[in-house]
Length: 238
Image (cartoon, rainbow, N blue to C red; front, side):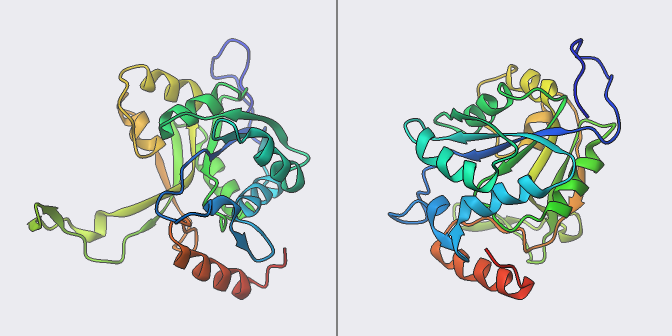
């Protein structure tokens, strides 16, 4: 779905969508090691995320967003695991929105798939499903229904009981209209936790694609054990 130079709706079914892989975080909850470089099934966590986009149908160019000063280090990983599609490595910012914006400004397509580098278990097939769901609308996000009972809590006390049937845990990739995201960001300098929330500033609602609980985000060391077990179950070899 490549954008035309006018920025209008002229895009064709089946054309490519650029991807932004965000890898500029601090890994504060993971400990001293950078979780993106942690070994998982014979390759770094980030390598699995890059390889999935390298293999996914409908993905054109890949832009990797690195922490300032780490561009060369992460580019070496990207050239190994996404050699055909890597287009650029750009410096991110202090907040997620700053990093996403830096990546989007290096993209060319009308729609862009934004993915956290720390979600190594996304599959090429699920990436393609989210891309397809976005077509014709403002965007689509990977997500999975919540299975736990969720409570609103303020100052250590339960203040609300949300209906679980309506709750989903947001994941990535999140495929959005590139210009809509930039327009929404220009409305205020506050950060957002994800890209669907950014588009909501314009009253735009994204579709949801169930990509299952296996599409986990590596946040703590124990997550690596779970991710390794899932890869073993899939029979995936690095």
